[in-house]
Image (cartoon, helix red, strand yellow):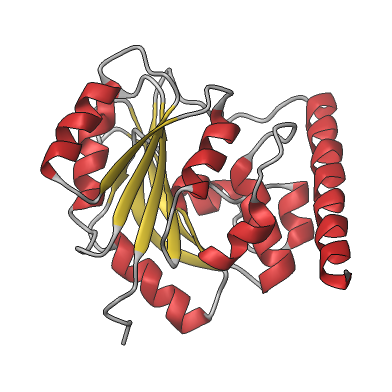
Length: 249
């Protein structure tokens, strides 16, 4: 049985996301308990994103709206995470749809597997029509499984499907601005410091693809892929060294 006082923090970052934001907000808030929170950091949206968020905030005290630092996605994610208070932290994009039971199943996986990070599968669809399915399983597409080396070579972490224990924030933050992907950073540090991540095969999210997505599903050329991995390894090594020194002081 889960503790009744477990607090979930959902960390969402927004930027010009008005088109699909209401669907996502509704799908998240309907799964949160009274003790939970949705922390939204908006990075200077020019559309109606902020007015939609304020509208929801007036009706729901669990929503905390923050002004982002205005320095891009990774800095905005760091900002949202720094302001969470929960024992379990869920990442959320502004344009997906959480499927019923996502929060409950992820929390159960934390307790059952004693994992630092839980990541679940997603069904990928295109645009506004959730029946326009691009792929039934993101896991199958990425060959998803845990492991530091595996996910440095080919990342299978996806932030919108990820949750992790609060203790991991100590090593995750700040997220280096030089790296390509924050989700890879969180997942691999969780694997390295706190044991294997739990990969749930259930698709608990509808992952929306459209022309304004911040992330791409296509592979980079070999040169950029190699550069990204070298940059990641450099940041990863420095973070490990930094925490090793702090523990020994």
